[in-house]
Length: 340
Ligand code: TRP
Image (tube, rainbow, N blue to C red):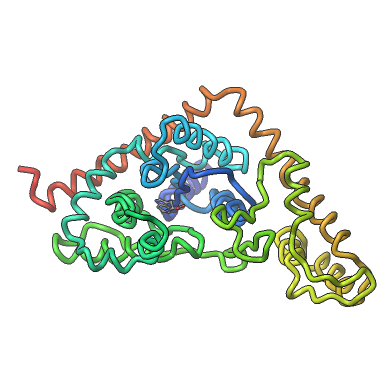
C-alpha cells in the first residue's frame, strides 16, 4: 500500500513541478474598473490553480507617467488591495512589487544594448505618446524592453494580457530570440495568452472601457458611484415596448460578462420582443455588478485595515521572485561576459 502512496506522491510532486509558469503585471496607475477586472485580473484568479503564477505590480513602469511620491505609493498599495480583494490567493500566487527585484533593471540594460532605436520607434504605444505628449521620456520609449526583462527573467511560459499589451509581449518574444542568437540559448520564448471573449469590455459610451476615455465603471466604487455610471450607459432612444437589438446594445454586452447562456437567452428574447426598457436592463446589470462587488469590497476593507499584512505578502512574494531572478541573472552575466 505504502508503495502506491509513495508513487502517487512522486507523481503529484512531479505534476506540480511541471506546472508551466504564468506571469503578468498591472501598472498601478489609477482606480481599478470593470474592464481591468474582466480583461485581466479575473484571468489571473481563474488560472491560479493551473499555473505556477507570478503576478506583480509594475511600479517601475508607472514612473514613466507618475512622478509624485504620495500618488505612486498610494497607487501601489491600492493595486495590491484590489488584487487580493479580487481573489488572488497569496498562498498560490507569488504576488510582489516589480521594484523589489532590481535585477530586472540590470537585465533591461543588457537588452537595451542589443535593441535598436528604429525597432522601438515602431511600437504603437510610443507612437501614440509622440502624438499626445510634448516630450517623451526615455523610460516611456524603453517601456517594452523593461517589460521584456520582467517577462524573461522569470523563465515565463505564458503571459496573459489584454489586447492592448499584445505588442509588448511580442517585443519580449523578439528580444528573447535576439539574445539567444547573440549569446546562445538563454531565454524561453513565452506564449501570449489572450482570452478572446473578455478581451474588450465596453465602457459606458460603447468604446473600450479605459481610464483615458473617462467611460469606466469603477470596481470598488460605492453603490451610488456604480449606479451613476451604469445609468449613464449610452443607448438608442427606443421605448419600452419597441423591439431592441441586443447585438448593438452596450448594456447587453456588459450583461454577457455576468449571465449564463440560458439567462442570456431569456434576456435576448425580452430585447427582441420589446418587453423590457433600457432602464430595467440597466437596473438588472447594476444588481449583477453589485453582487460581484459586495463580497470583494468586504475583503478589500479587511485587508485595508491591516496594511502591514499586505506589505508582508508583497515582501514574501519578492523574496521568492528574487531567488528565481538571481539564479537567472547569474547565467545571463556569464553569457554576456561580465562574470570573470
Ligand atoms: N504594461 C502592463 C500594463 O500596462 C504592465 C506590465 C509590466 C506587464 N510588465 C509586464 C504585463 C509584464 C505583463 C507582463 O498594464
